[in-house]
Image 1 (spheres, rainbow, N blue to C red):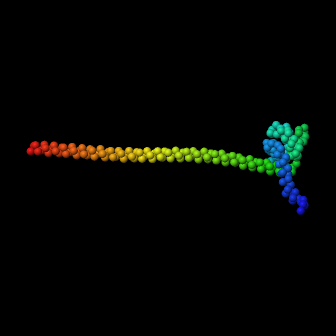
Image 2: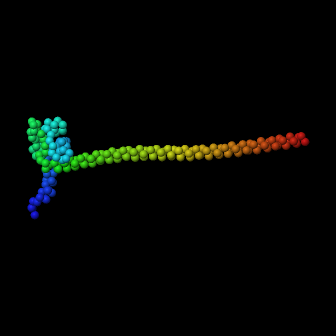
Image 3: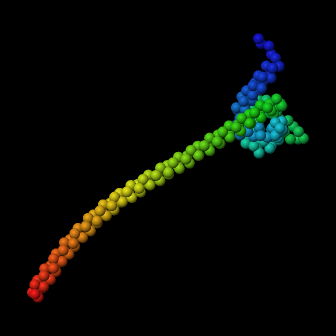
Length: 193
């Protein structure tokens, strides 16, 4: 049952190295990890190196973090042409570091997408609020116009009633005048005859 096979080493080896790497980088800042993962791996996923001076001045790296990563056997410091340089301690770390870098990029992308989604939701909430406000305003205007129309209709009806009353009064007055004219003309004719 407890036979160590090449398949077992291949399968579990990457997992063990990954856990070793995760534990070792947990004692330094995320900025330091990001810097070394970016600078010490080339585009092909192979080891590269950087001077200690450049790491301290270009990156957000402290000497104590370099010491921790060297002590935990993640980095090695070596002298080349009078410069102290840093690199990952072994090629076996490169796939793990590459995967960690890619995973972080995916997480950062997901976080950025979440932020964008939250901003879009906030914009949509604002748009919905303003749309609701506009609809409420439109409802108030429609109500006002409906009430105004009813009032105008009512005034128009009153005006029609008043006009009818005036017309009836004028008709009665005209009838009275015509009757007086006819009476006057009858009496004029009766006197002339």
